[in-house]
Amino acid sequence: VVSGVLSSTGAGTCTVTVNKAGDANYLAASSAPTTVTLAKAAQTTITLTSISGTYGVGLTMTFTGGSGTGLVSYGVANGTATGCAVVSGVLSSTGAGTCTVTVNKAGDANYLAASSAPTTVTLAASTKAPTTTSMIGSRSSVVYGDEGDQVFTATVSGLTSNTLPTGTVTFKFGTTVLCTTSTFSRVNAHTVTALCRLTSVQLPAGTYTVVAVYSGDVHYATSTSSPALNFTVTKDSSRTIVSESATSAISGSENLVTFSATVTSSQGEPVPSGYLVTIHVDGTTCTGPTNALGVATCHIANGVLVGGVFAVSATYTGDPNIAGSTSTNSLHFSVFTPPVITSTSSMTFHPGHSFSFHVTATGFPAPTYSLTGAPSGVSINSTTGVVSGTLSAGTYHFTIKATNSAGTTSQAFTLHS
Image 1 (cartoon, rainbow, N blue to C red):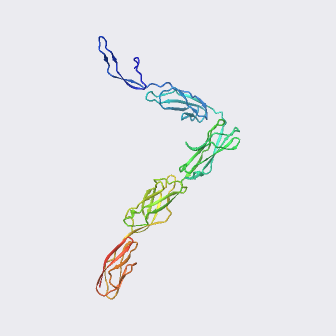
Image 2: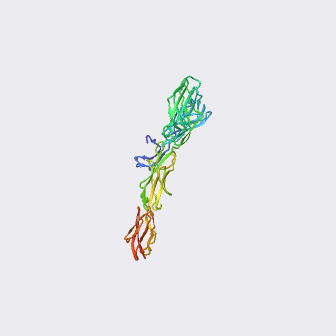
């Protein structure tokens, strides 16, 4: 408070106390502390000052007035011109004529929002020489990872002049710029060409509509190629190789074996992580996502396969840019099950006559057979399991064993006359 006038450096509240000194008749006195609110101020009047330009040359918006730190934006409407737009503070249109522009300045901590009056901006017809731009592509489609094979060629011609165009040519689809170049090759006195070669993985798989836009220069007006050029980026192919940490396992321990698949692309670009590979072990499957090296791993559950030899393969599901594939290498996995003797444990024979008995057993691989403690004259075929011999009258006890890679099982056996 200076000379009885309250001021501040920002909007908000102040707390004020009035103090009145005493005199010969009265004691000193003060008011209660009182909150005084200083509301946000209005901004100074905003006036758009950029009110004329030339079609084809971006007009930078300027204005006077406004207060505070609020962001500036523009409202734009077509007048007699079409396609009026302000981007990054520059007004453009798709034809000569007028646009209506309003400057908007947002409020901040101290000032209210404010806008200028709608202002007519005139974009006069260009006096530059007209140009035409055309474009061709080296191919209608390219494989993802091999986009470098695609070369666009733009031809810019100044139709009414014998001056070579300068400036830049920008190749783009939508708002995405593929490349911009200011390197031109002369065709004749008023025509040049410009090239754009894509890089190896510049675009994902898909279909694109591309145009070439000539920037114009001090002599020539801008122009855009027409019709637009359509071309396609197709998915790259892949190769999947399956592998296993062991070629066999005993039934019940299959989960200890790691199955892997390595996926590579034909063009050499990395296979993205997180896409599924399914590994098939006969009719049993497991899945795992690719890592940064294109490798996926998984394990099958214990006991889901009976004993035997099973073909192993892997299938990559593919990703947005690389097609799926199935492994082509030949791989097998064996599940071993221990033998179990299924034949009876005794047999009656005729003394002095030859006899035979066929021992049977399950298990994989097929077991071999042996005898322990058998009487003289009794033997077993280790491959077929046939026990044979000739004995005198009596009762004989011995042990039959069946053995394979998964273990050995024994059965007490009795021969009696």
